[in-house]
Amino acid sequence: MSPSSDSGRLHFLHSSDAWVFTGAIVYSRSRTDRSSIEESPSDAQPLVPSAAQRRVLIVDDNRDSAISLSMLLSLSGYDTKTAFDGEEALSVAQRFDPDVVLLDLGLPKLSGFDVCRRLRTTTCGRALVIIAVTGWGMEDDRLRSLDAGFDALLLKPVDPDVLRQKLREVAR
Image (cartoon, rainbow, N blue to C red):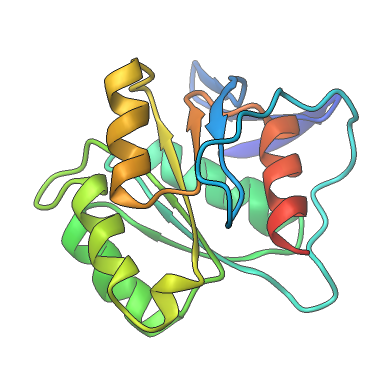
């Protein structure tokens, strides 16, 4: 698998397949206002973590998607780990102590909704930034993710500019 960059988009090429990160934000809420809506950013700045390296846990049962997103963030200086189901996500989160979790909703063994709820019950989970990264974008999905404790929801495929904006926001 070889990465190449093109105008802020990262493509991963493998055999005849190509994966491109693009997409839109569905909603985002601040840590205090749990209902605010934000638009997709128009500025294109590099994915650069704050002075202290940020730890990001990426959870997706689609291994190619999780690994590609991990590569994108690792190339930009983030410390990343991946998990491929809900139970593994909880285990890795406990050991890795991430700053941010990018969490798919439709996971085997334990849903992303349940993982988020469980993470929120831990001491470090209350301050943790948890972003749903999913193909589920219906109104019910947004409401359920808000109720579960997610801070934002990004639609797959993820737009690197939107991800940049979210990571800049959480680095503050």
